[in-house]
Picture 1 (spheres, rainbow, N blue to C red):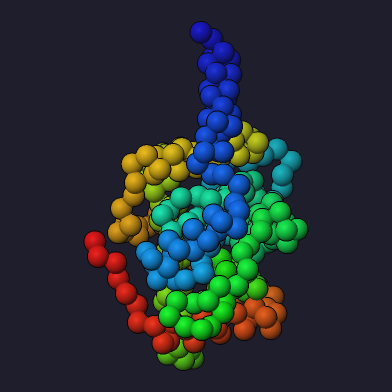
Picture 2: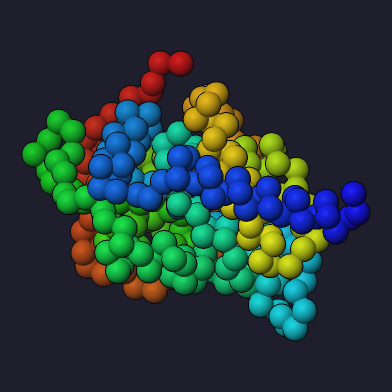
Length: 275
């Protein structure tokens, strides 16, 4: 077979894998699925009402024609961004591929289909739920690092310096849960070597490749399970860790939500799962 025929077969296979596996291994999120995700975060990572960990991963690409500096990221290479929401078991539950490398994580998130779906009500987050062993009612939330905005449905750590013991406790608990997305990226890169070097393709084919490896990642976990003691490596560290404190002012409701969890964690000792 000629090179063009082989190439056509490869791309067709990539597209079919996504189309066939996505409904099974990355289905549309519902209130019921969010509640199940929250139960797992509470049981495995001791963070109740958490419905996903959010982060971005820069994927190296060749420079698109006439793109200027749009894809040139702060790490000084050309990339598109994989914006991912991960559950407590290192599975991708929502992804958005194709953000410009130049954008911050906040900018990429706010330009993503996921963000628009949440604000538009297409992704319906469950109503409030009581925190375990209390009468305190709290919203369901996503967790992210310092590069993201603090929002009613998105928690981030307190800024660095002069933190109270309660704030430090909150930051540690959030960081522990947020590492699920870092570990998911690390597992993805270690298993799929194509992500560990520049992909020599245009942005649209790169998007298809990244979506395909993400859905295969989920399919493998669903089949074989996962070790939740996965150790953080250099590859799992957040691409956004050096971009903290670039976000605008959070709303009072967002601050109140974080304060609710801060007070709760200060009264609840961390319980580790038996290995």
